[in-house]
Image 1 (cartoon, rainbow, N blue to C red):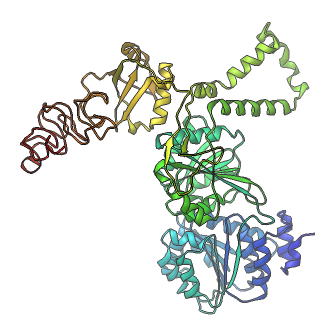
Image 2: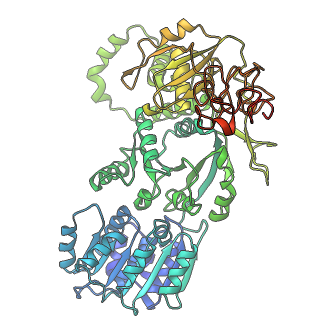
Length: 639
């Protein structure tokens, strides 16, 4: 028997949720349902995403509304279209046995005339997004004078999205006698302001932590260099062959780029962001819910309507701008009593956000290591052959084809057949991870598994003993490929190693520009490098490669090689170990950020910040830049 009947709900509602398979209320449902059906009270409920909040307010409002009255009695505000549609759909399921109940969903991106028709049909419950609700109010199509209950779902997220004025505008249209129910994962100041301004002595419920009926989430993070972020994501995904997850990005552009990279690399993935039309969003979500997609790449806003119980992983491609968003993101996994994993990909310069994320979420994030290529391949092989072993065979169905198969295989013995099957099935994986570098960055002073040092969030790249330092000539090459082609440094490095059939120790600096790049090789024959790319195409486009004999000085930050003392440079990174921003001996070499011809003056003048004569008299002599002649104000005497 369903335990929902003990909460005092109408029999029709109990029967509906029982048919849906719900028998045990979640903690937030057990606290809110009896309170709201027996008391006309305002409410502030704090509970993380995935705890059953929709039923926690949906069942009480359906219990209290009167199906015989044909005007709007209940208004539910949500931040996004997806969440709005999800709420309306859930309410329709809960009210399946309540005759006369009419529910309308109103949101942008869909026909407003159809929504007006639904309202005129006598909808008693309206779920909507703030923008579309205001539009309907101003058109006179939505009257809120008889509303008895207003629900603000994901209130903190609505405020984060800038809906404060819209919420005030909508609530001003509702009667003061209404009950306001506010549901939120966090309680920032703006949410508290709404509670103070629009509620009278609200009841307060807070459900936090891993309680009965809720799943558990393992909160983890890795630290990588920015150029290795995508490579790290791929490796973490490959380490979990049965993954069903969401990758969160901060911007729509980055969401699309990451999704396209994953699709190009053979993953069943797609993007969900605000630039998609409603039909496109519905199509992507349909594929994700049916598991045709294994990975969904989404912005924080677009993912607010995702209500899928069996998501195994959440990846934070970057730390969110708002620490509270971490809680919303992580809440997409570990739902309905299941366990899940939340992994934050932290760039070295973002490590300062870690403590704030932990404080806001109330969770201690565990530092984990990015698996090696060997570990990934082993895990993939074990998973595949485990599934192969468990596969049921239909002997009658395959019997007619066996003689032809045996003839095609010839004299292959079982061991050779096994090896060939493995090599064929996992060719791409084996190629990708044959020379996979270590992507981890560790905390200084780390010991054992816990690699973070309290009070010190500085990180450094781990020494890579498996990548030996080699000696050899360094040669620079021009490549007609750049950022506009959608390639990042990590992918570029893998491309070079694969095409040249060398290890990463043979690749020096990569200077990636908008539509071209410079690549430095170490100990490789120049003609061999050029020949290797003669027929190579990137995304179907031929790539031109030639030796960059006349590569402009300073294009990597300073003139000359890092070991040549006479040249200038930028601190000691790319130039002289002692000089800082310019200088040089007798006007030779490039300046700090410029180099000959780029920001400096003539061919022999040292470059700096000046461009031609724009800073001539005040910053240097004539057309020279920051370095230059001894007589210049900021020439050799100063720098």
